[in-house]
Length: 259
Image (cartoon, rainbow, N blue to C red; front, side, top):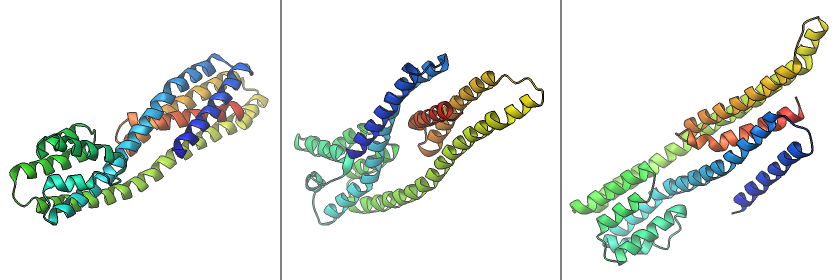
């Protein structure tokens, strides 16, 4: 909750600053196009961020749920009773799915069908596959705890591997931001040093044209780098919308205050 308040406050400050730049200072048509782009990207990036955070919480807590379910069944409990005992446990965003599972069981829905409903309420392929294995084991009968033990160990190991990969991918994501800022710094050096030297040497340089070109190229670079970052770190271009939002904001502020 505190993070959301901080993010919202930061975005509001950024919005007021942009309004100041647009209304108080004289700006070009590119500024208004940028402002419209930000208005479109903000709700998309916020929604994408919240969805990704919720999905990550589910994938993080699902192995814990399977582990706890396995431990309860190993003590000799029936699957239904084992699930009821887990209903009040803290599983983050996964807690709502566990409560739905327990509610369906109380209504008399068979265990395997209740798990199928649970799988239908998530967009995570990993969770769907795990629930499918649990549902299949319950339908087949036999030693359910053995299948759950193997599944639990696999999911916990997979979570650790994914966490390690995520930390490495974050480094690459950070590199994207560094490269983006270096690109802006090179443009600053070009406008402040190279072009004036060319003008003194007798070359005709249209500085306004190049300033506009650099601004537009910076915005395009931010958009495409954000798309690549989303594909690399989150597995989808849509997951890069928050990165696009941040990069174009950084690019705009640095272009209009430094260049």
